[in-house]
Amino acid sequence: MTINDRITKQLADDAVILYMKGEPMMPMCGFSATVVDILSKYDVDFQSYNILLDAELRQGLKDFSQWPTFPQLYVNGELVGGCDIISELHQSGELAELLANAQDN
Image (cartoon, rainbow, N blue to C red; front, side, top):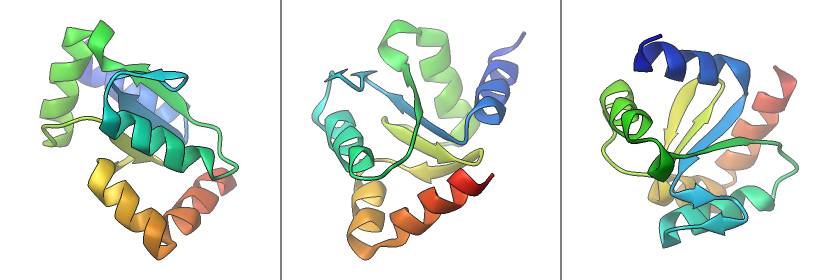
């Protein structure tokens, strides 16, 4: 299975995925901690993957998404963005709508 196949399968398996540095209970960078904190404000289940433990996944995601930094939040298989974008969407109320739609699928 290629790395793109792995990523595609992960995105198909869960509606909300956070590729991050560390784990939700122990983020390993401030940006990942911020996104986990924001997601915790919503009634949403999400899958997380620690990209620090898997160099192939870390590089594969950069190529797959054309997004060079982490964390990366995906909803319904689509890249939403990193910490700055998630923070802006949260502040504007758009993240609530996006996550509510993910729960419907």
